Length: 334
Image 1 (cartoon, rainbow, N blue to C red):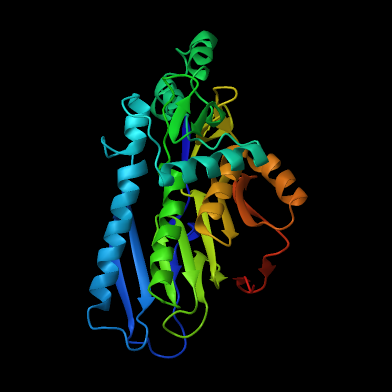
Image 2 (image 1 turned 180 degrees about the vertical axis):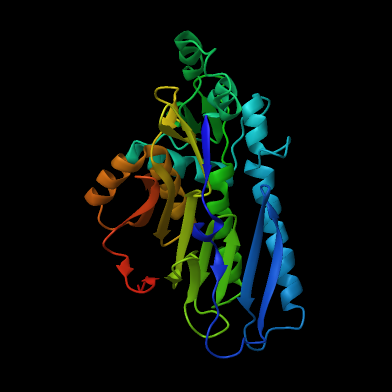
């Protein structure tokens, strides 16, 4: 397998840009970890808030992330999803059900595999496809019997798997849910201006400490940024590590319909949506669909804002939906 590394100056970066006046001292930051991903919340404390307000928000955020970990974290062996995977307790809580339903509805809408049940395929092929020469079609067919998000449902509060060997992983979808959940905490405390980042997902409301819409650098070399006002953004994939075999690029995804790796020039997807879960779902879907199918879908559904980064002629190219304006900066104004 041939591997190419792209210079770090063209990586997609999540860097907040504050410009103009000096930062407002009433903005504060809290940090933590959810589902193995670090998160950061920058928020403005409302006028006349009690002196304990920041501590109250920190406690509420910890309670929120604890609930998420207890539901869908693959690292918590006593979480709801871990028990469902091991078939020891099939009770599904509201968090698990919400993420499962969004994953399934996005898969049905786009035809994407969503990568939520492909762990056994990844194990079969091995890290960096080290087992490729040894795998037989019969082995792949055997694993396909227990892959596919459509084989899982929730009925009367219980998770139902068509095959008990099905293994679910919502680690990617879960960070979108986490950002929205933290946003709900901010809204409940009447916080009008905040930014939440969980992994490669960002949810913004109101303005930044400079009094302007939250801005995020997506291309350090060109100065391209995204302006977010009451919107969310999600990125799937990366531009730094290109892996090739027989002239084809492997994007670390597996097709749950065929059982084979996804070979596609699409390197990374960026989606803007009204909420983090939608943005995350579509960014994952497009990445697993590949470049051509994603473009076809985006041209059919003109209301989705997206940027696709793909590899062609030894360079990184971009496809942008028309509803993202191209200027000196890539700007979004709702």
